[in-house]
Image (cartoon, rainbow, N blue to C red; front, side, top):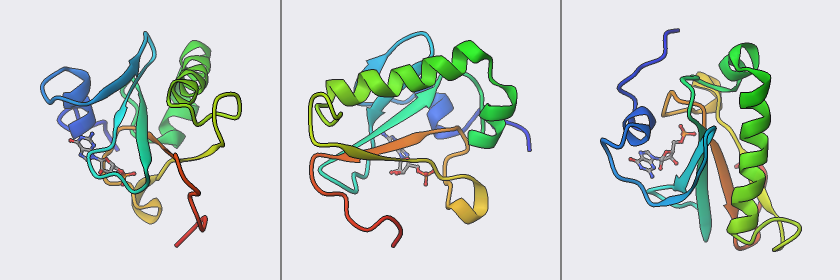
Length: 121
Ligand code: 5GP
């Protein structure tokens, strides 16, 4: 599958569609989900063009991989949901058809601010 340059997160990265930004650095952009499923529902996306976690894991550079994980850590601290600054959270990434992925640009959902509940509904 080829990366679709017109997916909604690609447009957000290019600044063509607004987002409620939480954090940005060379590797990631984080913003609030437009349709929050929990008290805190943030998204973290890599700046590179990756469709999903499989695509990222096979093609991303070591720097991009470290940048993504470190970026998530900065965001959860900022949101005060990390184990340092809060009471924890759930991180989730949907992959392709069976995973229920809607937007074909790799993203991690961060849920927190309250007990997140059952792992899979
Ligand atoms: P997926 O099902 O692909 O894992 O999740 C896509 C997520 O993107 C959904 O939770 C949806 O609410 C969110 N989303 C879709 N369009 C937009 C948008 O334009 N802005 C923001 N902030 N979130 C979006």
